[in-house]
Length: 390
Ligand SMILES: [Zn+2]
Image (tube, rainbow, N blue to C red; front, side, top):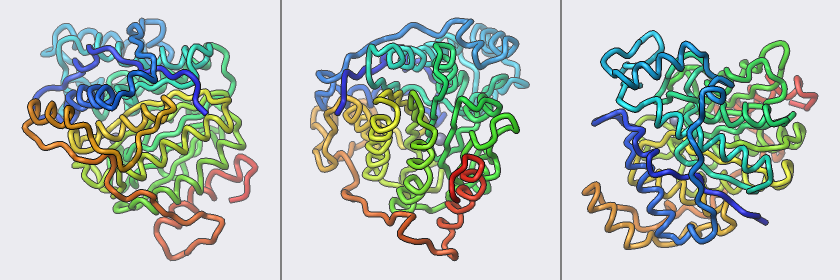
């Protein structure tokens, strides 16, 4: 099924560090990388460190004055300009912020280039998926929008149809904004309802600018949605749109903050369901995009308990050697976790809910059910704009 896969990794990405007590602790990246190694997945991927995104690449999405403001905050964190979202509680400025943010962006751009040029069939950057960064502002722990930059680079290389699927618990607002007027990019985001979660956008009625009607898709899930509902929503919306759009490349964002243990949000998804969606994205890439797949990380604040396992599954799937849901977590890694964090690591690779069962949309829906109402709102808002039945 899978061809050659690349894992984008430069140890220096762990310098993306907003400081003590910030939820985006870079240990999440270090522990993911070491779990990938402990599982032996290194043998099945090519580990590649791409160069940092340069000025002309960053400019594909970001405004020049914003990039200048990031550089200034990076050189002198005390002088960060809050009007650009820098030096705020969510996005504190730190020394070297520009360089490490550009390095993370470079991994996603490098992944896109490798997949487009056929050097790899799949490429994973779990340090990426920083989907809230706006063209002119930092937002929601995100400085440069590596996901939008990867898509923009694909367009620059000649892609005419790129699909972006974002299953982070938060709305993929920055990527949607970057391509709001561009019918070449289909953005689909499944997230907790904007009424109960940052960034308070991602309503089903957000469907794209008049020049690109139907190119933005939003599924706003009720707080508390669990595995069966999350998978039902994904399958009721995503495959039909991807089949119709026929992307040349699939870019996916796999924020792990949908998990029931995540401290910053209110969905109740297990690792088993996260893994099932990763498998589904991989299959969609093969069915509709000749296998071209760029997979990114994203949010995820249960940094020991959830994130490393979730993204190790993602790497295994891309590598063509998926890690079994029931596989034990290697003892060697559990010892490392304890030494580094004084927290006990989990024992199994998922939450023991495999196989996750869910009901397909075409088997009927319940008009009184809040999840089904959410799915129907999305289908009604956007499917007719694409010539599909709601
Ligand atoms: Zn998130």
